[in-house]
Length: 560
Image 1: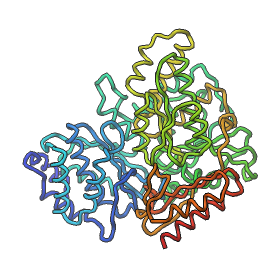
Image 2: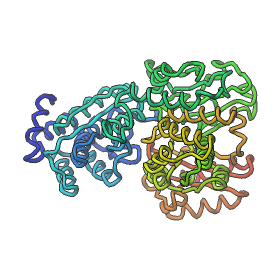
Image 3: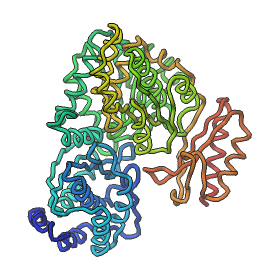
C-alpha cells in the first residue's frame, strides 16, 4: 500500500470513506487469527509482532477523532511502557493532551477486531454517524514511539492508516510518552492566551528547566552530595534526561544517569525500571556492584516510556537486611499535596487542594493525606484519576506505581497571577505556585517533570530521603502478579475494592483477610498485561507473605 496513492483519499473524503483504499490497507495489515484485542486504559498492548493491524485501524479512528474535534491535533503513541521489550502497544491522545475520550474506546475495540474490510468500514460508519462527523473537515495527527525494536514496523502502519484518511501527519520520532502528550496540547494552544509551551521537544525542555530554575534559584540542594542516581530503565527516558540536563547547570541539579543503554537487544525494563523496583521492592539488578554506598545516597527509577517514577534509598550497605526503603507514588503524592496546600495557605487564597488515590494506595498514606486535604478514591487507571483530580482547584493524583501529576485549574492559575499578596511571604508563595504550574506536566504523569518537582520540594524543606520517608510509616504491603487464562472474567466494583466475578471468590477473599489483624487485600485484572494483580496489606510484617500467597492461590484456583 503506497502512501502517495493513499493520500489521494483526502479529496474523496467529502463523498464518504475511501472504502477501496481501506480494503487495500486491510489486505496489507490483516487482523491476526485467533487473537482478540481490547482497547483499555493503556490503549492496546500485547506482543509487538502482532500489532500492525491494530496500528493501521486505530490510526483511521484517530483521524476521525481529529475531524470530530474540528481539525484539532490528536496524538498516537507507540509504546508498551513498563512491559517487557517484546511487547508493544498503541494509545491515542486527545486534543488537550489527555487520554482518549472514554466513549471512543469501544469503537477502537470493535475496529481492531474487525476481520474484514467490510466489518471495519461498518464500524467506522457507525462512529461517523453517532458522532455526526463531517468527513470534509481536515484531520491532524502527531505520533511518536519509544525504543522497542518493533516500533519502526508499527509506525509504518500508523502512517499508512493516517494517509488513508488524508490526515496531516507529524512524525515526532523517538519521544517519551509525556513528551507526546505535551506536544499535542502545545500544538492545539499555540498562539492563544492559554499557550502551553513551544510545540517542540526543545520547547518541552525549556519549559521544565526554566520553571525549575525559578523555583530553586535561592535554595541549596539537600542532595548536593551524593548526586541523585537515576535508573532510566534502558529506555527512551535516558536520552530525554540527558537532553534536559543540558538546560540545567550542574550546581542546581547533580545527577548520575544509569541503565541508559537503548541499543542492546533485551535490556529494556529488564531487571530495572520503576515497575521492577516497585514490584520487587529492591534495587535494580546489579546496582550492588555498580554503585558505591554512601549514607544518604538516594535513587529513582523511570519506566520504559518515562511516565512513571519511584524513589528509594538505602539505610545501610546494599544487601543488608531492611536497608532498602521505597518512596513510591503514595509518598510522592503525600509530599506534593502537603507542600502545595501549605503554599496555598501562605498565599492567602481560597482554593481547594485535593488528592486522588486508588484502593491500592497504602493505608498509612491515605490516613496521612486525610489529615491535610480531601481525598477521593477511584478505580485504577489514569483516566479515572485525572478526571477526579479535575474536580479540585488543585488536584494531586498518583498511583502507587509512580504514575501521576498535579492539575491546576484555570481559575487557580488566574488567582496566582491576580491575587494581591498581603505579605512578602504570600508574594513568594504565589510566585512558587505560578512556577509549579509551569514545572508540572499537567497532561499526564511525567517522570522527568515529577523528578524535578520532588527535588524542588525537598530543597524547600531541606529534607533528604530519610526525612521525607519519616513523614509516615508505610503499612507492610505486597503486590503480586498472577498469570491467568482469561483476565477478563475478573470483574470489580467499589473502585476495584470488591470482585463481582468469578462468583463466590470475593467471599473467600473476605474469609482469608478476616484471619489477619487490620488487613486488606484486593484483586483486579491488569489493564496492560495478561494477569491479575493481587494487593495485600497487613499491620504486622510477619503476616504479609501468608496473606498475599493465600489470596493469590484463591485466584489461581478460580482460574483452573
